[in-house]
Amino acid sequence: MNRVLLVFILCIFNSCDDGDLVIETIDFNDISISFCESTTTVNSTLFFKTNTTEALVLELQSGILKNEVSPETIVSTIPGQSQLIYRTFSENVASNYFCDAVPPVIPTVSDEFEAERGEVLITTVQSENDSTIFEHKIELSGISFVNSSGQRITDLRINDFGTITTEE
Image (cartoon, rainbow, N blue to C red; front, side, top):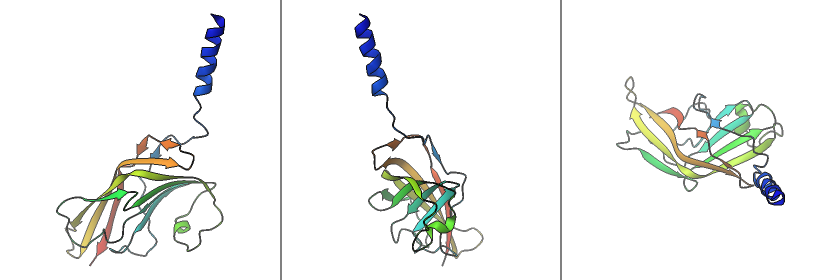
């Protein structure tokens, strides 16, 4: 009986390996969207959020932003049409990291998780104050991140990516 109990306890301890995954949540809801251009246009596709040593990078499909009111929510699938990447870095990352043609050597990417499924939802309205300005609300839905080792992040708190404006 003692041997059976010992084998059972050893099996439990050996089967509960979660690897080196230390990321518990991804929460960028309260962080503003950054972009590389001085102003966003309908041709802008790269948007990101940085939070000290981590970043959330969204690359929208080309032509999805339009200077017109969307009668319904525009949907872009991930990874088919748009891409979403979560990165952790060895040191604090500045927003110009994503805008350089060749990224700087430091900080280095510690880990990268690509969204393997999900959707980008975009709702466009015309500004109440200026009819030449359009506000694009970007939301994320059903996002699932997996890194190259197959590790998955399950507690995601990234629903509202933010709002950007474009002008005719």
